[in-house]
Image (cartoon, rainbow, N blue to C red; front, side, top):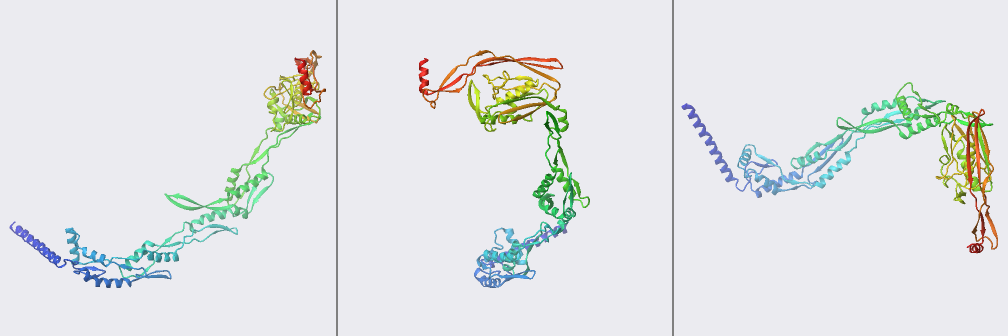
Length: 592
């Protein structure tokens, strides 16, 4: 135990002695280096220890001279680029360099200062010189090299040339590592002795190279390997290899794979050219469906058969074309076609019962009233080929529509509130009267019929029918189990409407009573400046009012199926006489 205590005392004395010695050494070194750099301080490996600023200047000038004569050289392939410190306008800052050297061991932090001084004593410390080179000159040197060596990466491409699929060569891109070359210049040229170095470059891989396009090439070669034959209903259409190659295109796409973007190439068909191909095929195939037609010959009806339409199923065609194009063998497919049935097929027309003439009626009119004739012929054409289903109610206004200028109707006289007024469609009552009589004579059920306000002698007594849009209509019901086909025909002076259906033996007898209950018309005067004074001009003749009754007896095989009476009252139509205004006013004064 006593020996261990003695050992501790000896050790303590030894350590204390070392500390005291170090303190003395530090104190001595501090006194020696007062106002000077500490011992063993070096600048660019030259000792400036224990020197004041003025004493270190000569050494700094030597360092500056050596540094200004430094050159740096970069080599790449067979090219080289060299530049010196003078070329870069190097500026040596002696004051700042000495200041950095003087601060070693004088930071004010005891432990840091002791550590730095220990390092100085044991190894010495070499500090870099403080200097600057021209940023502009350095950048120009670097940029000149960049312009000389820079190469953009070129991706491979795939093209079709002379019916051969070719992959164009790729090129690796090259650019200067500007940060690294700048570090070389600053560290080796300024802080070292320059030298020769490999030019720091960065190689840039192209997004697509030959290997990445091999599968694309293989796909394209299959597509253009052989002609493609498209079977059509009546013939076939062949696309030779050249035509196929013309519609092939290669499209670059950016996709994400494992979270990273990747450039790929797809083999596609040019939208515009594939659409042209589809339209060409469609033109050879497609036709609109044609309805069956009823042809009248000698009061009998012959059915002209319907024709099915055809339409290319475009989406399916495109799918089959693409599938066929990606096969080396069996490069043939049948164009997918949709059969379009007409609205009126032959079968349906056969079942409608439109076989023969059932009833017909013709009305006549003056050919001199051109606008009126035009309107009559126009609306007759609208009724031609109209079909009326069994038990359907025919409405004249709904079927023909409103009579307007836009539909081609002209202005002609129309009876409105007892007077003739020009309106678009004037004269169509001639047609409504015609179709009323056709339905009446055919034994069909009359739903609505309106007589004219006064009697018109060219129409059968009690069998006229007027219409007015939104006010008066003509309606009848096809009260049979067979369809009705209306055929219309007109000339400059006549209008004929005929019903074709199945004549199942229904007979119609019409009995018209003599006129009765006559009412005298009145004379009405109107002023007209174009009439000479002392004369009268009859503008329109008067018509007496009267009553008439028409009886329709419908029978079949001698059995009466219906007996109906239609009573009509026609009101008097005033006689209109035109007078000179002076004569008119005299007449009015005399009657007051």
